[in-house]
Length: 190
Image (cartoon, rainbow, N blue to C red; front, side):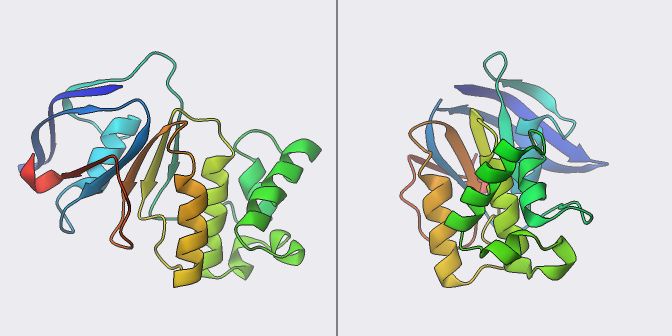
């Protein structure tokens, strides 16, 4: 369980998050909604410890967090499969696991060998999703993971990502699709 007390984030004089108090479950799907610019990504970054904030975010000790960011952030000198495997170690076992994940996400064998510059935006998003799933995480953070994907790939990626809701907490920010969430909160209403 994540306990958030009086969370505040400001950029200069502009307050982006103002006094959020929230209890998040240990497992399940939590959808974070709100209009563009309301602080959804900032909230996720604070939970991950990547954003300075005031207040308190309590997570269980040794909590492992994995994330799909708005940008794919792939390493340009590695293949798609290597970009997935690298979160652990690039070795034969992890390359096999990476290729299995990419295959599930619709990649052909030759696409797995391509570098990011040779991939479409949608393919890069799927590589980023596979990379996040390589980690045995307690919390999976998804910040617009379906951006750049067509309807078929949204369905494939969401099914794979959200199949883990019984095993981990999934925090999802998206403007695409209608998901059967365990909890939904609008940042504007907190």
